[in-house]
Picture 1 (cartoon, rainbow, N blue to C red):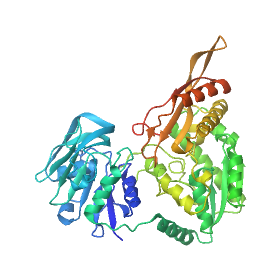
Picture 2 (picture 1 turned 180 degrees about the vertical axis):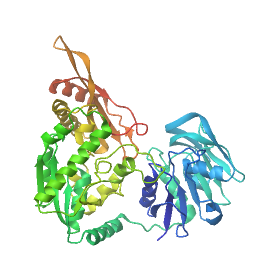
Picture 3 (picture 1 turned 90 degrees about the vertical axis):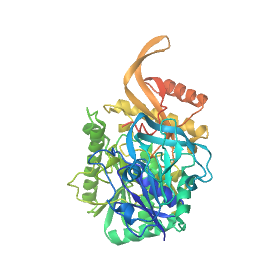
Amino acid sequence: MDKIGVFDFGGQYCHLIARRIRDLGVYAEIIYEPSQEYKGFILSGGPGNISEEEAPQLPEEFFNEVEVPVLGICYGHQMIAQTFGGKVERGREREYGKKTAILENSSSLFKGLNKEEQVWMSHYDQVTILPDDFDVIGSTDICGIAAYQNIHKNIFGVQFHPEVIHTINGTKILKNFLDIIGCKREWKLSQWVEKKIHELQTEIGSNRVIMAVSGGVDSTVAAALLTKAKINAHFIHVDTGLMRLNESEEVAKIFEDLGTENLHIVDAKKRFFKRLEDISDPELKRKIIGNLFIDIFEEESDRLDNFDFLGQGTIYPDRIESAQPSKHASVIKTHHNVGGLPERMKLKLIEPLNELYKDEVRKIGEMLGLPKRYIDRHPFPGPALAIRILGIVTEERVDILRKADAIVTQIIENNGIYDSLWQVFPALIPVKSVGVMGDKRTYEYILTIRAVESVDAMTADWARLDYDVLEEISTKIINKVNGVNRVLYDITSKPPGTIEYE
């Protein structure tokens, strides 16, 4: 099977590049050293500055040894230019977000694209002088060399990110690169399912697994995968007091429908609120919640007669933003499934979905026969409403947010737009503003509504909700939820923001 090697230079989009290539039917994997087994290479972006001494680099002889096509993206684009004698400098302005690029569509890399294309930029440094035998094939108003090629060596570079959905025809660019290489389309996600089931059976065998389930798509699909592999698993739902309205009841219904008898619900509300008392730092919140989860799992493991593995529904965006997949990557946030795990944990960790993205997880859920209502649920963070309350978490604030969340979800569903959104939810800002209700002065909390469109959570754009829908949300929250007198709408994309607030 033809394979593409994606060099990891620490960029959060590195695995996204590989996943896009897999979507096109060609197997791609993350690599750190060149190998003759690959039909082509893609050099990823990264947070480093190309001029820094510690900046990631390719092996010195890479371009002398490699004779297959190479595509550089963002940092990789800059690295190639500098390696061949070009110049990379700080730009006069930063470029983040959507831009219009002027492309030379006679280039084989841009075959079938328009002369002007929307692309997604995320850089400050840029190539200012090209090496010999390299030609400019793309530019923006700020970046004069936004794309280049060396047709003699089959080397290409783009400053923008074709792997993200906001580069409208980015998939065509990647497809064109695969066509230049001549890759056969032989990779299928169904092969991954078969392989993963075999891996689970081999690794776990007759050992017992204890696993957290929230009712979200990730943990539900992970549980279904363990069940399909005939693993001896017990599923634990911890009622933290931070969940959505009626969440525990819904989880029980989900697992009843799945025909799973080994579901145990633990009421731990008081313990979580006690541990979170007076804690406002978001990273500390996540770690406290993660540690308490593990405490509870260990207690349940002992009570239920010992387990060997802790199963989790962690997916790749959780892991790539929480921990450094390479020494050059930056930590964006700590996920409770990843950064919150204490070193003393007695159980071995099993994460069957940790190399997959949300849309892939949904597809696997379909393959496993899960009902659509489970597969298409919006993502919900492991630390739950605790990270949608900026600042200190109290029972009063959670109650306010839980009621508002139910209202937002119901209105979005009633208006038939739930499935078109990646996520929609309110968050509580821990400041109060002056308002007027019934001719009386009020001084109450502010809620902000976050609605985004995405495919994989690595990037997201704010959703352009109809004003009538926003008005309905605002009016109903203020009328029905005591403690709120102002509702805002968040119009920040990712990047520069994240989807969740903490």
